[in-house]
Amino acid sequence: MNSLEISNDDFRRLAAEVVALSAEYLSVLDARSIFPNTSGAETEQVFALDLPEQGLGDRALADLRQVMERARAQNGRFFGYVQGAGEPVATLGDLFASVINQNMTAWRSSPAGVTVERTVVRWLAEAVGCRGFLGTLTGGGSAANLMGLAMARETKTPGNEQGLWNKTAGVVYASEQIHMAVPKAVAMLGIGRENLRYIPCDDSYRMIPSELERAIREDEGRGRPAISVVASAGTVNTGAVDPLREIAEIAHARGIWMHVDGAYGALAALAAPEKFDGLNLVDSLSLDPHKWLYQPLDCGCLLYRDVEKARKTFRYTGTYAKQLSSDPIEGFAFFEESIELSRRFRALKLWLSLRYHGLASFRAAIHRDLDHAQRLARSIDGSPLLERLAPVELSAVCFRHLASREAPEEKRNWFNLELLKKIIGRGKIYLSNAELQGKFCLRACIVNYLTKDSDIDTVVPEVLAAAQEVQA
Image 1 (cartoon, rainbow, N blue to C red):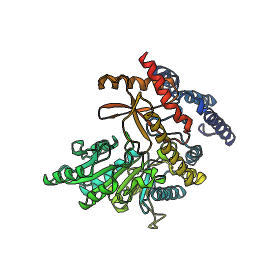
Image 2 (cartoon, rainbow, N blue to C red):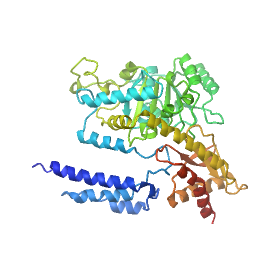
Image 3 (cartoon, rainbow, N blue to C red):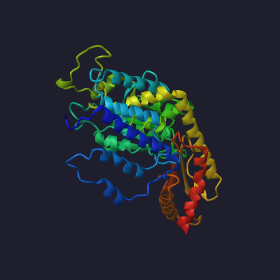
């Protein structure tokens, strides 16, 4: 017998052990410390082992408990970054996707899988008001933004064949609150970060359309072509949604590609479509089901209006991958519309999760997240020791402890940094951080279907208790 093969009975037994451990983890998730009681030295000692020449057999699975004990708990009090708990039904879809191990290159590589992914992409487009858009699933918003900007660059300043060396540098416009994925993308695409022009924001951290228009006119006067305007449908710091319709009108009046980074916020259009007026006018859009559809990592998505522009950007087929059919279904290939060739079956978990629960359940969960953010904002506003630093448009709440009202900003920033460390170390809630106008912020982002009112009501008392320890 091949040494890598196991019997069906052994697979059932091993799978049952993994499922039992998973169920145990979920059953005690709410009671777990939000951050494991461990250290870098300990994780190195436990996990940074020599590669075994001979297999460990069942002992290898036993060590999954070590992983579980040192995992950050994704329970209802996790408010860090833009991430919540993975929805359990979707995890089963993820397991089955690994078992059947389909390569999502083309229909002939995975007839069921490719059809499922194309269906899921259609569902996502319709859910956010972009009916008729096509697209592809990705590892996350960074990959989706890179691909969207690649389409913009190839449409406005083609460089796939001859490169960009003899072309006038084009400009990408984005708000000063844009996610770091965008400057990374313009660097990798050969546009150059010096050609990324940041547009000022208003007091609500939304791009100012008149400032965008002024910047475009200035660059037109210098003979510099515009490649793309990148707007945000939920900035990573505050959740601000740029005025999408106004920005789209400015971009399209000049023939400029409009891309929207909606990785955090766009799926909130399910619950609050009025916040995303003009989203259907964009040329391309990133969104992340592993954020506001609560899917296990990873699951991002790029949507776009014009499939031919995607193919112009990404199509390059070796003879070994030549399609064998001209049928629009059987001849379809994701690799002609995407960066990747080999791709895992990401769509299955989302397809299963959406069909199991129904869209209404996800819409209701997003509504609760939005309501919880407002509840937390009211709680912060009610404390004389805390200061909220930005409006709450979606579910990100930025605030700080005032420490001493006479203290300089530098001292307040230091205090809140130490406070964040203390909060995480206490293990009851998990916050992350942001910086707004030079002020270090505590940031709670609620994208978590497990969060209850009582979890929200824990935040302010826990912050104040941690602050007393820092001050002691």
